[in-house]
Structure formats: C-alpha cells, structure tokens
Image (cartoon, rainbow over the protein chains, first blue to last red):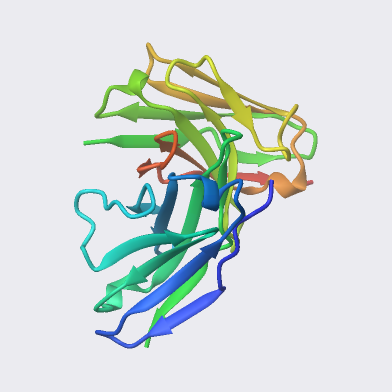
Length: 110
Length: 116
C-alpha cells in the first residue's frame, strides 16, 4: 500500500496560521470522505483532530480545521500555540478497507 | 471513559511468534471496528490490520498478509493480533485504535522487538 504525501516539516510563530498538505490519488484522498488528521506528541499515542475531511471531535479546539480539494487534503492550525508543536499525520480510509497514512509532518512553533 | 490497553509485546527472535491483545472498556465494544497500527522507532504510522465490529470482515496490509491474523472476542471486549514468522522489520510500537473509518481512540501501545 502506498502512503500519502506530506511535507516533512512546517513551522510558524505563536498566533500565526500554518497549513499542512496531504496529497493522495483519486483512489484514496480524492475519492473518500473519510480523510482524518491525527496529532502525536513525543512519546504519546496519536489523537484524532479532524475526521471526515473537516469535522472536529468534541474537545478539539476550533483553531484546527480541515479541507480538501481534489486529491489534496489540508489541515490548518490558526492562532498557533506552543502546545500545538507535534507531529501531524493525515489518513484516508480507502475503498479497499485499509487505512492509508501520510509520512507525517513535524510542526514547530517558533 | 473510553479506554484501550494493549499487551503481549516483548522481544522475540526472527521467525518467532507473539500474540497481542487489546482490551477495551468504557463503550459498547461490539459496535466498533478495531485497527492495529504500528510505529517503528522514529518513524511514522503504518496500518497493519482491521476487524469489523462483528468480526465478519478482516483486512491486512500487504506486508503482514499471511503472517498476521486478527480476531476478536466480543464477550471479553478484546481484539487479538496473532503474529507469526516475525521479521526484524516488524519491530515497532503496536497500537490498537477504535473506529473503522477514523480511529478516534488509541491505546498507549505495546512494544514488539524482533532481534536475534
């Protein structure tokens, strides 16, 4: 199974906005409403931040938002805070009943 | 509250076997699909397998197909991952996660080390 393509790193200053992209194909990201974003702090389990492209689970700040255009999904973090520094992974539940993950993006808050 | 706890990891030689368990609590276990996802040291997330809520459907990553078997016992709120013919490249922290299309709760993981 192929992985989704994410930039290895992203950064922004406190208060700024940063967007992380996730590129797949029409067989996964482009053709699925089941695109998610996960946050992982060092030594911790992943945490679901966005599901079904743009939905936020209860308890996730509205500073986190998701979108999709064609085969590329995006996660935007607005009003960056120090605690947002983490690794972020996109995932897509593809038609073949498997989960595809992106390679991960390390977000640094400068 | 929703809780998933993995167990069964350890150190095993190449070619050996391990059975991982994922014990769930705090929700109606039989309503949810469960994934196994692994993460090699310093690397990204790697999907391993999924079992549907009723155990009728099971799917595997190509890298583990034929070697790993997923199962569940809804009477015990537990999912299992039987891992046979383990390889050095199977070394990873193994997580179980609830939810078929978007895993929304994850356990802390159990570490599997395959080394001679």
